[in-house]
Amino acid sequence: MSMLAEFKAFLLKTNALALAVGVVIGGAVGKVVSSIVADLIMPIVSLVTPDGEWKQITAGPKGEFKIGSFLGAVVDFVAVAIVIFLIVKALMREKPAPPPPPTKDCPQCLEKVPAAATRCRACTSPLG
Image (cartoon, rainbow, N blue to C red):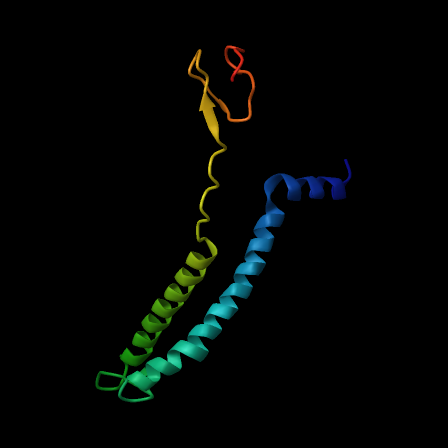
């Protein structure tokens, strides 16, 4: 078997191609989610906070505790998590199951048979 054929078999057998596509799509979705958070949500957060530069807040005698930076990372994480949750929820919305096909009961054996059937599939008695 040639190396190209082995590689093709590997891709198809191990779902490596599906994984690669998932990684590429995940990267693209990550960019969109990051843009939503940075360009739409964080400006609103900055308007709500008393100081527009709230990510620059520090504590300690030399400003070694970057509280604003930490809080900014937490807010970014929560915003990204919420946006991803909403996107996944919208994409994974369950569709209602189709109704089952109409059936009727066989008068002889009480087996469920399709409504259009003329004979029972279990006991072969005619259905009227």
